[in-house]
Length: 73
Image 1: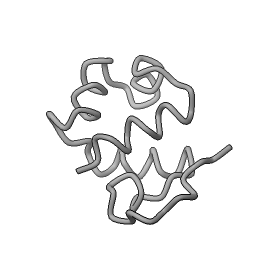
Image 2: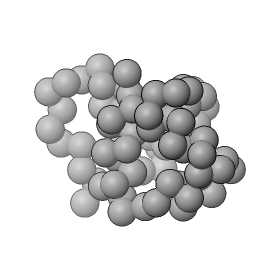
Image 3: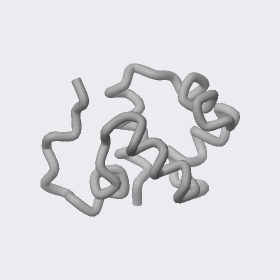
């Protein structure tokens, strides 16, 4: 489940759902659905998010529960 870490990553970037939605070409409601687990962010967008902002896919997807070095600041 990636809902909490997607939101955590966005908050670390100090971006709103609207701002990040603009980057991905989606509405704020879509970002909210991804963050709350109502729908799943497409793999292409996950990879783009990871590449643009430096968060590992393992961390975003919560596969690496011990990854404490998630911050890009």
